Image 1 (cartoon, helix red, strand yellow):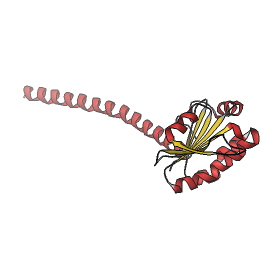
Image 2: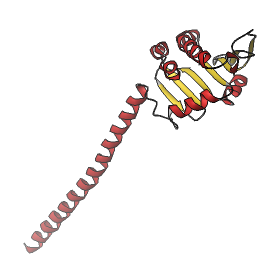
Image 3: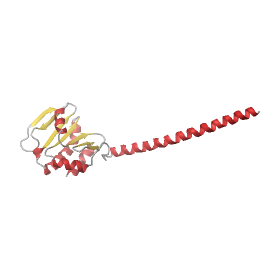
Image 4: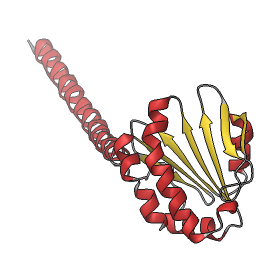
Length: 187
């Protein structure tokens, strides 16, 4: 009988040890997982609402200052079909009007990049004056746009903005492009 009491005692102590350890291991990772899920949800909601926190490395005022003081700037509009182009049209038109009030139109490079056909249409001498339209590969126009301070408008189902010191990448749906808050901010 003494032997059976020892076996029960050893079994209960093993059970007690076994029960205590998994509770500690399960509790801590579950807490971290819950916190991680909350953080991911907050970031996703902010990106969806267009707060521009994802990928932004500099504040907008710093970009705006450099953009406005540059001798030459670019506005690049990318689209994959006619409905995206039509949705972006009100926004790029507003941005051009705002830019033309603060600088010579000939210092604004404007590129319409058709991503589906990998082509680009642009005024060869910038905007203003006698405009001569050119057509080239999308890589040619993106190369020029990447070499000077610029704004890139891109149609997207999600609204967000990424800002670097010399480039701003605006992604937006039809409603965002119709409101075009970036034109207001540039004013």
